[in-house]
Length: 174
Ligand SMILES: [Zn+2]
Ligand SMILES: [Zn+2]
Image (cartoon, rainbow, N blue to C red):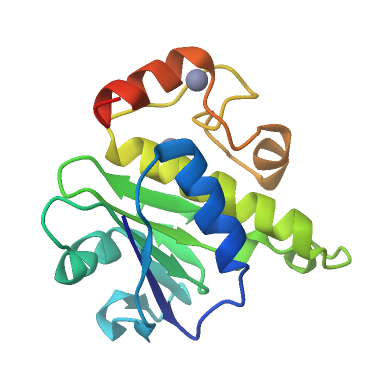
């Protein structure tokens, strides 16, 4: 799996994210150097970046059949949604998450780096789950539960429920 940060790069605990992804997916994780955010993805009127634009942009960094996960510090949107935490494609095996709304400070609370990193892991695992063909799960503790708000994200864990994890293992050939 390749992780592709976009600049300005979010200061995240790379080791923590790498270890969690390795523990869950048993895949080698390679970090690329940050690249500039594609200007074409910016919507001036909304002041946000188009999430699905990144799914195509990330194809540039693909090696063989690897999954590519982009990390963006800007706010992302899709046309019918006010914002998105992330987006992924099963077909291109690319995914992107935005860290913009994962900070406590975004909601007017005291910043907490551990809470922030838990959210980064949850959103990353969730979007990678989509690249493996998983849909949303109705178990609120499962990482594939759809997060409408940060409350949903905080309630769930960064692990798959047993039903979803069976699908993950099948998808990665375990
Ligand atoms: Zn989802
Ligand atoms: Zn599940």
